[in-house]
Image 1 (cartoon, rainbow, N blue to C red):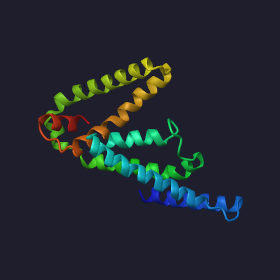
Image 2 (tube, one colour):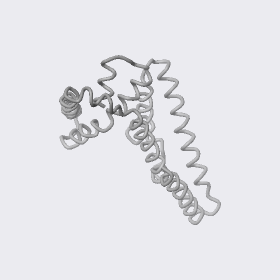
Image 3 (tube, one colour):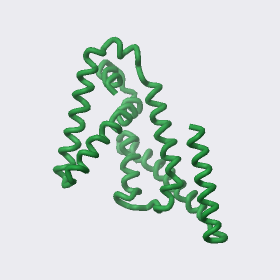
Image 4 (cartoon, rainbow, N blue to C red):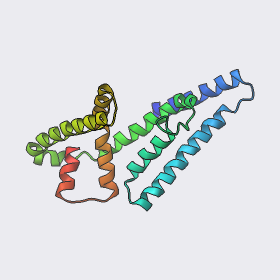
Length: 180
């Protein structure tokens, strides 16, 4: 994690040096700070909207990212993606670290005979559902297969965040947490 923060700072410093060499008196870092501020503001507004609409915050954050990203609004300047990449890696590292703290070893021992076939079925069903659904929406077979595969990687984090946010408890929640 410290390496990621260091990379972010070095990347920002390199971008500043390049900007000042190519355009003396350039305010490129101000624009990056503005982009960061815009992203943080969008996150805050998405969180507030999720509470108002009674949506999971993860869903609202994903929608905000789609609206601001190159898929729809293309609001973030493309030259800022390189500088912001270490920050993205830091965010993913923190999400994965948080998921690691929720890993219930004692529950896996108790229900491993049921959990492994259910987990395998969940993975296969997710890939098939997302791949077929996106293919039917007009994507190419390769793009649909890629999104189906990516759904396996993002579904566990989303599921855990929704369960934690709604304070869900009970046997189904416990089994779901174990499967994830």
